[in-house]
Amino acid sequence: MTFAPRTWAVGEVVPAAIMNTEIRDQFNSMFAARTVYVPTWTSTSVAPVLGNGTLTGRHMKIGRMAFVTINLSAGSTTTFGTGNYSFSLPFAAASSGVAEVGASQVLGTDRWVGGVVISSASSTVSPFVAISATNTRTDFVTNTRPETLASGAQIRMSFMYETAS
Image 1: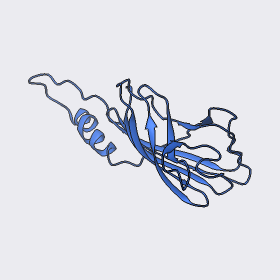
Image 2 (image 1 turned 90 degrees about the horizontal axis):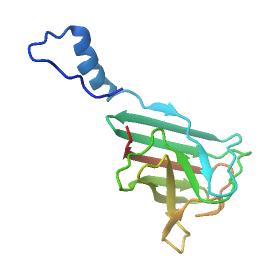
Image 3 (image 1 turned 180 degrees about the vertical axis):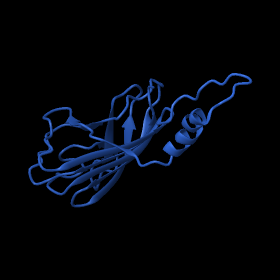
């Protein structure tokens, strides 16, 4: 709910309703539950299909900072497509000239810890993890990187970034 505060006039008598909106409600919004949104899961080649899996996103926006979590749990009818994965953001990223980073995990047969990258002015986020158990350089998560994904696999992301507005 947070938004730009009101401009006050010198000597203005402020009624309780305005004080509640401008101060109490904005302060309380910082302690509210996150807002649910449904991210879109895409890839750079053959599109994945969620099937009976679940994909949930939650966010809290305070000013122009968004705090976001995305969780994908593959079901028995989920197909993983091919290519590098990305997920839609709840708000476009600021055109700041810098990339934002956060945390990611891929849970399959093993647990793979990595990061996320949100490019300047982007509307998507991409998870990165180690390429394999023997090659610890990071790269995009795909249907086979870091391991072949199957029913029960999960991709989790948590990050914050500056929004465009």
